[in-house]
Image (cartoon, rainbow, N blue to C red; front, side, top):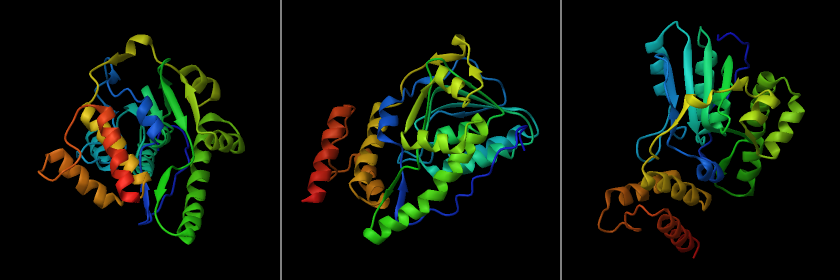
Length: 277
């Protein structure tokens, strides 16, 4: 069960009216090209959003479980550069890593935000790049429904937040009440601050991190548009169908396929305005 005794997070089943998405601010601050300069053999890479996206990409618990089975009863390294995403997938990955029989070494190469920061807490040893960032906040969810649904949503989220606070507190040695304040503030820690706060054990050597090519700009822009549409209240199934049309460039699809992030954002704004009219 790793070397540390870490608390389990029991997330249960996601309500049908919920959609967990990557925080837009975290997506904006994410440099997707950051990777490890050299990774040990038994390394699991988490270098994308958490959960499967419209492109069939993203880091899932199924993929991590398969990697752990392949590695077997050996020490494991987990490289993270992720803006977060699906809370339930992040919790599932955290629980898989905390159950691993050998030492879990986490390396935050660039960003570990939201659900990715929860995954990072599964490490027996957590190292972060000096220029890296770790962000913690309350569970970030898009919910649809009437006022009763919104009250129910708050009731559902409260134990999730409490469980996450317990995990951050266990790893850092900080009182849970203080951690809850950090989460309320959507607290960002740079490398040195994360170590000082106890959320990381040390800084990675400068030569441990490499800057590769950014992921496809159209895909990154699509993820931002997906989040904007979700915030506007469009159900996940409809967003996936719409973005699938855009991806495929079908005759009636709008907006047109483009690699300009500003065009994507403008198109999303037009779609949201049309939805609200």
